[in-house]
Structure formats: structure tokens, C-alpha cells
Amino acid sequence: MSDKILVAYATKAGSTAEVAEAVGQELRDAGAEVEVQPAKEVKDLSPYKAVIVGSAIRMGKWVPEATSFVEKNREALSQVPVAYFVVCMTMKDDTEENHRTVEAYLDPVCEIVEPLDKGLFAGTINYSKLSFPARTMSKAMKVSEGDFRDWEAIGAWARQVHSRLTRG
Ligand SMILES: Cc1cc2nc3c(=O)[nH]c(=O)nc-3n(C[C@H](O)[C@H](O)[C@H](O)COP(=O)(O)O)c2cc1C
Image 1 (cartoon, rainbow, N blue to C red):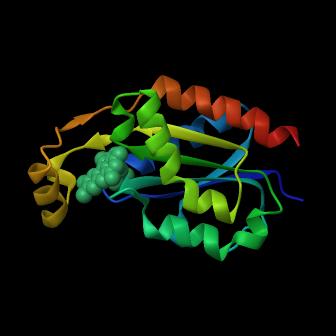
Image 2: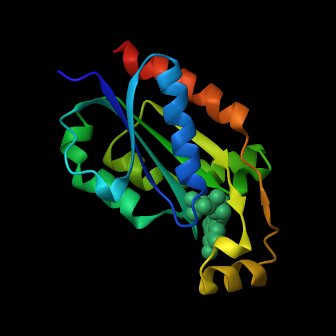
């Protein structure tokens, strides 16, 4: 039985990939053997004893390839400890109401496989990294640019998840 943890992610503009790498590095620092991969490239879950799945949010939803990863691997994921994280702009202001909104983004995947833990993180908007339609939409919605990722919070969550995922 393998001792590896998988961090699978889906991103549109790159910020979630960096969050996934940071989570992976924190787990390695805690002594785990970790692979960090785009969700769409993962072929087989048998090498992993636990799986973390993270996605950017677009229009209130996980990026489709992250959701289909959970759907496709429903059976394998129900056999191992699982945690989810989201990276989005709503978490820029960490209010109770925003927490509820962002928790609700995870409802569709929680209905497929219930996670042991959920990480809710603020993300990044960089117009130069967006496709033309996404940039146009963000400008129309007056979304301000900036990197709001809280690396301390991301690291703390990864350490907490490491102990929860490896406990049982
Ligand atoms: C077109 C578009 C739609 C977005 N929709 C939401 C949303 O519904 N809720 C939210 O909190 N953040 C939303 N965001 C913010 C992204 O989730 C955030 O920028 C995140 O860091 C993107 O991750 P990525 O760089 O990995 O793609 C949106 C961003 C874009 C560009």
C-alpha cells in the first residue's frame, strides 16, 4: 500500500496551481510523500492513500475538470480520506456571509464524496493572465486586480489536513 498523498487541482489562470503546490510543499515538509498534478492528467488513484482536490471558482462553480475528476473517481475517492479547497475572490473579505457563499460552491462535490476538510482561500485577479472574455467580464463587473492569497492560512490548513488525513 502506497503512502503517497495526491493534490489534484484545476485552474484557469494559474493561481490555484500555485496554491496546490504550496499545499503539497507543506505536506512534504510534514514528512509526507506528495504528488501535485492537474486533475485532468490523473489517470489512476490506486497509488494514493489520501487525496486533496482544489479548484478555482468561475461563476460560482468549480472549474468543470475538477468536478468531473470527483465524479469519475467517485468510487476510489470514497475509499480514502479526501479534502477539498477552493480559490476565489469572495474569500478576499472573510465574513460569515462570504464563508457561507463559498461553502455553497462546494455543495455539488460534497454531495458526490464528503470531504474530511474544506479549505476556503482568497485568490488572484491579474487581467493580463485572463482570456479576452474573462477579462471583459471581470472589467464589466469592476473586479479589482490583486493577489489576495494568504500563504500563512494556506500553510496552516495544509498542516491541519495532513494530521486529519493521516490519522485514519
Ligand atoms: C470570469 C471569472 C469569474 C469568476 N467568478 C467567481 C465567482 O463566481 N466567485 C468568486 O468568488 N470568484 C470568482 N472569480 C475569481 C477567481 O476564482 C479567482 O480569480 C481565482 O484566483 C482564479 O483562480 P485561477 O488563477 O487558478 O484560475 C472569477 C474570476 C473570473 C476571471
